[in-house]
Length: 371
Image (cartoon, rainbow, N blue to C red; front, side, top):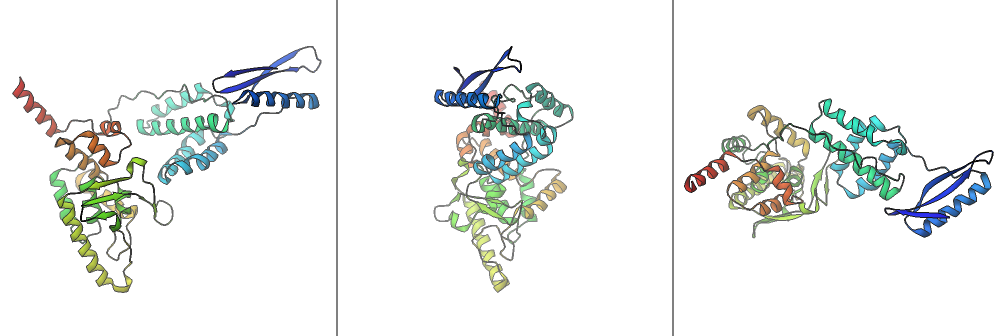
């Protein structure tokens, strides 16, 4: 019995005689993660070889059924519903469409690399290619480490193609555009609350829409983010874990937002009296005039309005605007990162590494004083 360890796995080697018994073929297979498991696998293989004259066949699984298993047993459990939907779309329209009928063992690094390169040549953006690359790699790592369907990751040596296109700058609202927004959507309009909250805190749209009055401490002027709204399929659901663990946070807010929330709460009381029994009672901050909670579909028109009036931008631009204002006024990067709920300070730095006009002028003014 010949056993050896390679990496974290133990392998056994067995000899198979030819039909006429004149030659013998050496075959090496994974026996497990311990010596004992490999020895047991060797004995089972020898017993079957003695009984049938052949080794047990390796488990065969094609790529698409495996990816569906990965989605359900790993992605759905460990990641958010928006991420699940995103990964499922990438699998359906890209990875599964190209490699879905392949056996997992037949996936070749060279063929995957050529396909990844072709995506760039076909005009896909860097972010799209990167998303496809990440999903494929994560799935293959799970196939090796968790399921042991294959021995090596065919994505291990695949490289992202180089993109020379500069990264897009985050779109921020100017002071004049902010004035136009709140003139168009004043107190009483359903967009007022989510817009002023995002502008003053940098919350994501799902975090704004999931916010409830019980999450807001008006006395200490803080709000707690502990959920996000998910409503792509079926009825809106407030999921108890936002985008990442770091998204769970308590944010202090200023006098501007305090006054805005007081005005908005007063308006909700007026609407409650106006609609009477038809008013939908709940604790949500962002509601329609009749009290029903707002969802992402409500915000689509706002994004369309931004593109029509400003030529670009979206609700997410409030988040970029909030971050940029803090950085331009010399608020530390680590504070900005925690306030935004980023998983690391590097994420914040990568997004907001561009120098705005205000920061550029301030730097030149300092240089004038030095030189």
